[in-house]
Image (cartoon, rainbow, N blue to C red; front, side):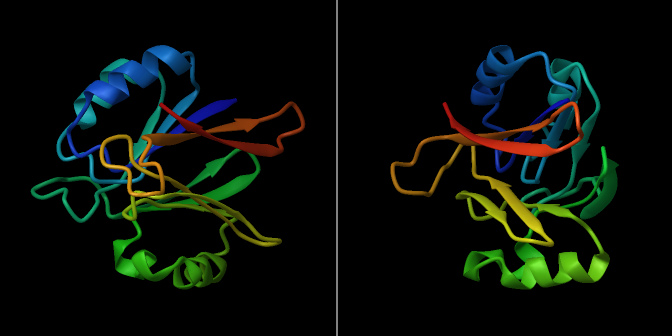
Length: 159
């Protein structure tokens, strides 16, 4: 199973359209918030199930703030992260993830990619396709793959 994880596209969809052509086929698209109204575009072009939450710049939306769902054997919590002070680090987010009993928390907001794997919790932030803030400022995304044994593998990629 191949899952494309993106965030913080801020309605600058040209990079998403370029990326989806490059990585298709995928089995799921996950957006960690701040799509700013592009949800229909993701649904149209992904060609698979889409999970998406609202971010701090998603005004006047019906998108949920957070979601929990099953992905293979993993319980996933999807949130934008701004309500958990992720700009100061992800420790509060991981504590909340542990309290919720999830295996993986996926978030955005910082525009900086993170794959933080600890014994009990994996925290994933794909960075931003539109306004990256990490050193080098390259647009980033994560491809998550579940192998034949159901184990998750994460690949941080850049456009």
